[in-house]
Image 1 (cartoon, rainbow, N blue to C red):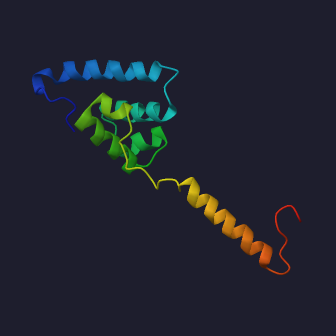
Image 2 (image 1 turned 180 degrees about the horizontal axis):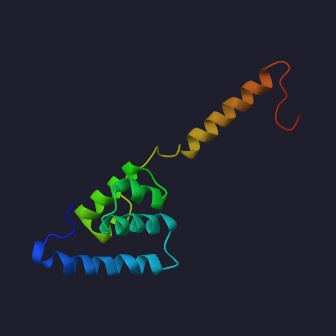
Image 3 (image 1 turned 90 degrees about the vertical axis):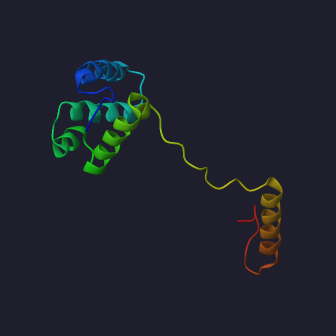
Length: 121
C-alpha cells in the first residue's frame, strides 16, 4: 500500500506529516471513539504490521482494517475523519396520514365487541 502520491523520494516526509496529524487525532480527548479507532488502525498499518495483527490490536475484523486502509490511501486523513454520505431513509408520514390512521383505528376498535376502547381498560 502506498501512503503518499509524491513518489518514493518524498514518501518518508509525507508519512511523517500524516503520522503527526494522526497522532494529534489520537491525543484529542474530544474525538469520537470511532475516529480514534480508525486512526489507530491506520497507524498500526503504517508500522507495517500484518492485517491480522492490526485487527487483533484494534479489536476489529480484517474487512474493517482493509476498509480503512483503502479509505486512507484514497482520501488521506480527511477520509478517516468523516463518514461517507448515505441516502436518507424513508420520509416520515405526513401528519394528516397519521391522524387518518389513528381515527380509523379508534373507530374500528369502538365497533368490535369485547374490545375496550382507549381509557376503558
